[in-house]
Each structure stands twice: as C-alpha cells, then as structure tokens.
Image (cartoon, rainbow, N blue to C red; front, side, top):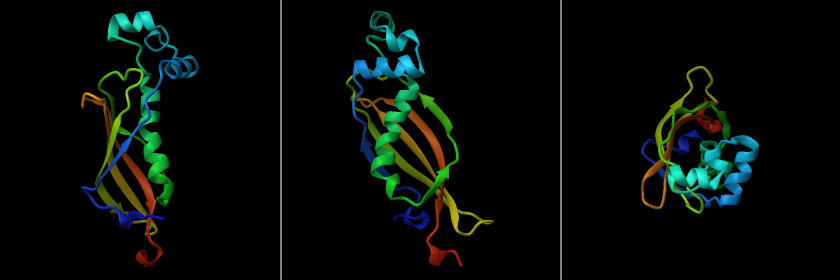
Length: 149
C-alpha cells in the first residue's frame, strides 16, 4: 500500500488507455450523452472527420488505467473534485490515449494528521501527440501511521 509520504512533487506516472470502438462510443452515447456527434456517424464525419467519443466517456477511459493500475494500491480516502477540466480535442474511434499523471503537491492536513492531499495533473494525448484531455485533481490520501504522531 502506498501512502501520502510515498509521493513527491514532480513524480510522473504514465499509462495507456484502451481505444474505444465506434460501437462502444455509440453505446455509451445512447445511455449517457445522446448527442448526434456521438451517435450519427454521417453527421459527426461532416463536422469532425469521424464519429467522436463523448467527453464523459473520454474522461472515464483516461481515468480507468490510473484507477486500475495505480490507485488500487494507494490508501485513497476519496477524491475532492476536478479543477480546470478540459476536453481540448475530439477523440476518434480506435485511438489509444497516452495518459500522464504528474504529482503537483503533497500536503499533510493540519487538522487531521492521519491524512493529506495529493494534488496531480492528469492529461491524455492522442496518437498524433495532441493533448485531448486534462484536469487537475486533488485526492485525500492516508498518511503512514508512524508518521502521524
């Protein structure tokens, strides 16, 4: 298990998201974001060159490897929201995304010595190297027990 003290500003973690198929983009859109950009290939192609994923689906796909490959082994108490959430470019079917998590700050709590805040920036790039998604994310993380005295 990794705790707050196991992180330091400047650390970088890299992941890769699985590409989304046109069918998965349409299925997600039908349930969560039924805009024509995500459901109608002809309409989306005329505007964006092809169908595009919902920003919400993109966000989930970007966070998935972070959650399943990293955060599962972190003493995470809970997320605190998103700052500066941006969808900067459309994501097209069958594009894997290169995901980068950069630790910005590690701040022990003054009022609750058993925890602190890990603040990181998460970004994702398409195969052309263009940033398609970014957000700043504070997360409450437990501290090591012997460091909280």
